[in-house]
Image 1 (cartoon, rainbow, N blue to C red):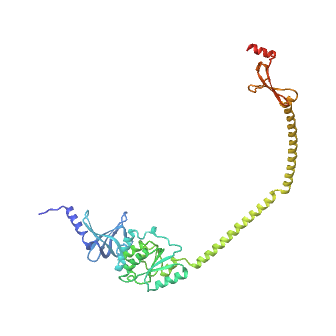
Image 2 (cartoon, rainbow, N blue to C red):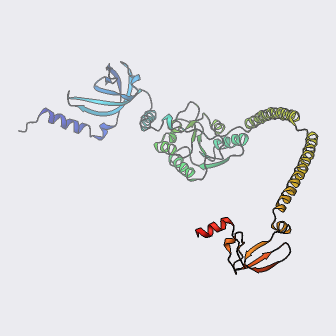
Image 3 (spheres, rainbow, N blue to C red):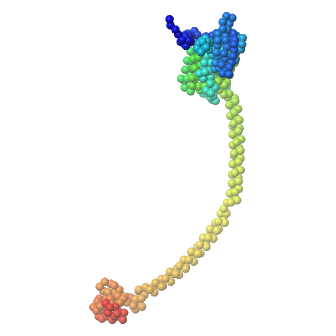
Length: 406
């Protein structure tokens, strides 16, 4: 006989219960009982009907805890878990809705919670719309009124923009794949600045393609900002939550997508007026500055006539001074010439002196000690000259002294 521990059996029950497929995705309707909310923020309660009761735990991260109240009829979604410590089988709830809500609403809420957790609705990733788009893609049916309304509004407000239709069914089984393909096509096109995804009103079933997870991811992955305009203003789809901006109608989406040319014209006129006023003020200020500078120039301008007379006076004075200086210099030069003339050898010779040079080397003889008897001499007179020869030497006392010392 095999004997098992409590832990072994508890583990087996946990493994078995938590891996049965049907027990991992349950929708259970019933009445709330034994509700408690400790400080942790989790909710503990039972959901029961006339014949049975099931323990439930709803962690604070789940959605719909505010709908829990004793006796409330609800529909809870979750999975079966086994809590080994107490041996409790319990439903781990992730979503609560009031009883009476349809299956589509429950599925929508479940998908919304999952995509929100994944960050597809994060406000921080919402992108601004371009102020002046050039090409706007439109994801909608080519035969519906939506496409007609968007063209009319854009043509009236901003005809410069080019609309690029990515046609797709917007209802039925082929709608969701068609919408995904339309986004893929626009994202491979060049210079798409903005995308509008739109369809008219309808029931939840009619709008269901825009609650498709693949459509949500296609919008999330779009390279261009997306405006959604799905159904009526009271309708909210997953596409609206993922899109960068939401419009209540297709016409409103078109108005949101492009500027109004009339408003642009008013803005341009206003700015031109402001610019003209600004330029007029600048020109007035500059004109005042020019006038001030002109007046200052007149006050400080040179008296050219007086300057010309002054120049003439200076030139006359300079000329007189130069003439006087030249006369003085001429007198000085004449005096120097006379003094030099008095010292000139030729004048000396004319007074009866002669220039005696040694006949051998032409050296000027100034001392009798330079020559001896028989030495040739060259005598130069004021006019002409002659050769001579020393016959005798007459020494002065100084010469005799030098000869004696020599």
